[in-house]
Amino acid sequence: MTNVLVLAGRGRYGDPWHDHAATTDAIATLLRADGHDVVVRSTFPDALDDVRPDLLVVNSGRGPLDPAEDDDWRGFHDRRAALVAAGVPVLGVHQAANTFGDDPRWPATLGGRWVEGVSWHPPLDAATFRVLDAHHPVTAGLAEVAATDERYADLEVASASRVLLAADVAGDDGTGAHPVVWVGPGPGRVVYDALGHDVRSYSSPDRRALLRREVAWLLGR
Image (cartoon, rainbow, N blue to C red; front, side, top):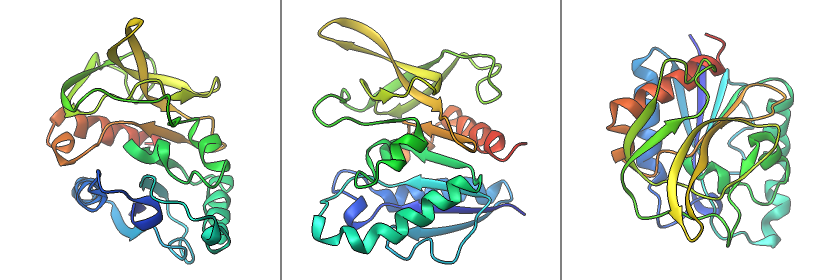
């Protein structure tokens, strides 16, 4: 049985606009239905103290970062970086592009990030996300993914990342294809998936199928 650890945003890595507990429960319910052994932990400094999962899922965001608390979190970030270095695959969901802002190793792992004052999204609505790479196992055979969700735009994406899905978002310079799902540079297998603002996203069969594909690839299946 595969051991999956899902980190749910809280406090320092939570905010009033996202119900990380509810979306984490939706993720955990789906993965348990597929036979995975899922442990859910809130983002506390000791959340990674005694674990070595087969897959790490990060579903957290950005709360108030008090520099006075940075030392309290250094061990957490070191343990997370050690898991990545050891080859534990990582799935970052939605706000994961805007979490752990006090550790530059995280966006380097994820292969991109939300940039304050640059990245944005139009209002949540019924959305269609286009497949840009039909050759990767995560998206092979797919043309699009439909879900009620936010469409992130103008994320910073590393040149080494492999973009799989994009959102078509109209801006001042016209409509552009903005990367929302990509494979990160690693060193192990990493996927960032910008979908998942709230539980409405997980009610979509397309979105659930995408998540399952991501997890299967991350686990080498």
